[in-house]
Image (cartoon, rainbow, N blue to C red):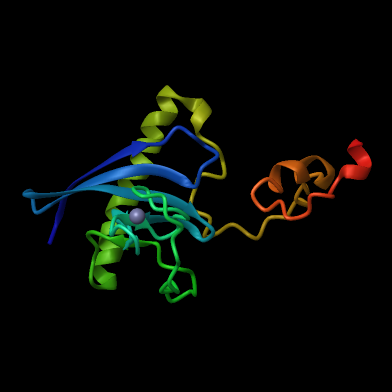
Amino acid sequence: MEITEAKVKLVDDAEDKLQAFATVTLDGCFVVRDLKIIDGNNGLFVAMPSRKLTDRCGKCGTKNHLRASFCNDCGAKIKHRELAVDDQGRPKLHVDVAHPINSKCREYLQSKVLEEFQKEMVRAKGARPDIIKDDRRPKLDVPPAEKEPEKKPAPAQDSEGEKKDGDDKPEFGMGIFS
Ligand SMILES: [Zn+2]
């Protein structure tokens, strides 16, 4: 199999891990869209097009996303089954709709897509220097950066908003507000 064309569309939001979408053409005759270029913890990688897994509502049979709390159709509270986990122990919420079946093909596809991504970044740099940042390159050779201490949210300000769906302590805060 040969990837005869790879197209990359950059995502503008620099805050996001999602850097770009890609479309590839296989052997000049089959197109796969919606590959994603992700800036992960170990550098850039290509995620295959995927869809969210669903489960049927026990009451009406409508398919809902696995993390849904209530049925989209009848509103019934959804009883969750134990989720399947991937090889890193994370719950499987998505399934790839197209993917390589061996590492040789995966590496070939990834190198073609990332190559096109780098070209697109260079092209974009000409037009839009503001969207390129130093941290948007593969991180494989970068030593671990000194971690800035994460800002902790001020609990006194946030607690009111977070309590709204589990408000089982009506007396909370009464001393302050009454
Ligand atoms: Zn339902």
